[in-house]
Image 1 (cartoon, rainbow, N blue to C red):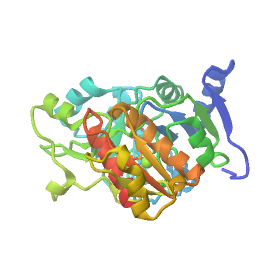
Image 2 (cartoon, protein in one colour):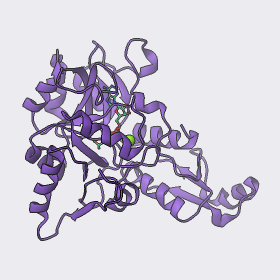
Image 3 (tube, helix red, strand yellow):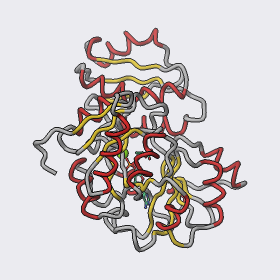
Length: 324
Ligand code: TXA
Ligand code: MG
């Protein structure tokens, strides 16, 4: 697409929203780029069967080409066409968690372009729960490849203004569906081997998967055979400000002394503390973006130490803190 043209921005609640959504979905089907809300984060979608369209996702985001895309489906029939030799646990997991915030890595079928899978012979599939996302996929009638709708390396977008900030003029349509309810990306689970591998902790917890399957899932580092989610090796989720993770026993009354010890001015340090894991997931990426807009140099985060989203929250926070 021509990067000088503005994106068409449409908002849930607008009088002509459903007609415009239709237009956006048809544009996607024909090779265009459409950003849209899901229940986890905003996604940047293209027709997953159209290699050229998917290539334009990588250029719009500035994404490395070996980082594969998650393919979003609206039905099990659509999912089945994209995979080969799916194990029985795939259907068990889908029954429990789809539509919802979990992606499964399976052997890909020949119709999935190599560009979508980053050259791997596998594909990650997800059926989102968001009504708008499902509508777009259904109207387009094709599976939709969609990474998070941010410029590569920046925090994932959880509000429409984040998408507009990063991608306006770089995509054909931006569909605004309000603030995202979950705020952390889907769990990515590789189910090709006998024992599943948790490639990325996410909104569906490890515990829920293990309870359903009646067995432990592995971490990528515990196994030689399963490849890591290639995307996890790149810089992620970070604001420009440095991020420090505070220990459990840190108290906000220590804050002034701590900042003084660091030799920083108080107005350059943002302190973040959250009521619970759901609020932390919902707000963390937004708070990172705000920190940059407001010119903070350091963000101190006191993480929530329990809840279903604990592992996902800590994973994103540590990545932001380490800058990788
Ligand atoms: O919640 C989500 O998953 C969001 C929304 C839009 O659905 N999408 C998202 O996509 O977070 P992205 O591209 O930002 O992250 C996809 C992750 C990356 O770490 C990527 O390496 C991994 O999934 N992935 C995708 N396909 C894979 C595959 N075939 N094998 C291993 N990892 C894969
Ligand atoms: Mg992403």
